[in-house]
Length: 224
Image (cartoon, rainbow, N blue to C red; front, side, top):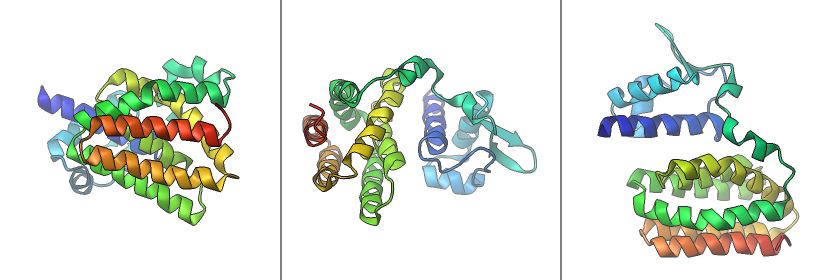
């Protein structure tokens, strides 16, 4: 049972690499079994099971003698259940209020429940955001991956299902902050504060830091 749960989590992580991080796109071949299992810190048996799960859901295609590929029909694994919400005309204030309702709690639960490896991934993504900002590059996808990693570390499926709504807020926030240097600078500071508390396993600190992060963004972007 434990092995199955681990396989599900690994399948979810590979799906994130495809849909959020855009590391693999439709038609791409995944790294070979040895490399990918080593990168993910799992056994090849667990990786094979995770790949079978994704293949069964139409995300991956296993081609005998050739390898494992991302299926061309990328739309098959978009978040269909939330399409009505995603297509609704909601403003930035509505979206950030939703973030304020559940992201601090997500940070709290993730700090308590995340594996050490999940914490390391969250910290690494925070650093990638800083690198994107320093290089003047679009950070939207990495921002999404950062908040997605926190949500997944809660090990609460309902929180994961709400993430596409958060992505809308992140998209709007990045656009609105482009002309506001202070907002960008505070994003870096806030992310460091969140990850420092998470790395220290201080759940209340992470919860407060996430709330401060969202409230500060709302104030600086003038959407309170």
